[in-house]
Length: 186
Image 1 (cartoon, one colour):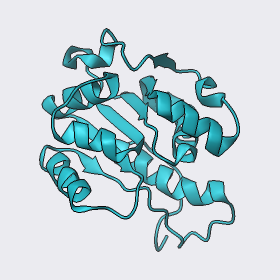
Image 2 (tube, one colour):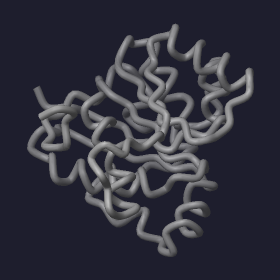
Image 3 (tube, helix red, strand yellow):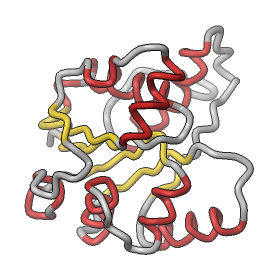
Image 4 (spheres, helix red, strand yellow):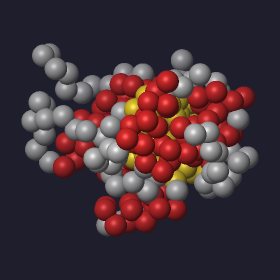
């Protein structure tokens, strides 16, 4: 069964994770029925600052405006089975945890949770305060997955991209896609 995935990008630091995820999804295209993308305004600014380019639209997927509540994934009837928010700001996390659907990102997350589908929040902040932790607990109890953007080092990454890919490969695993990547003790 091919996956229908929403990739949402918020304004937290960590644009490299979103960039690499979109590139990896293109490589795994045979496993995908559809990928939709939505970005916050801040995400575009952070991407430009961190990656020194405006390539956030340089992918084959349809991109939706953050206020487009007519986007298919704004309704459960569209049957998107997975949503990844990468990076996920603490503001977006807080709105999702409290059911505040004030844009397409938070509305889609609300839909994914109510439909009991897979929501993966790639939290990118540190340190966490108690409000962040409580919001993570709320989202987890509602069925979401908190996947902090914490890279691993046991594959001995040599570049920033290789280091960031350790997180992206975990996201791909959580989505449920077949993926060749470093595995512990293999």
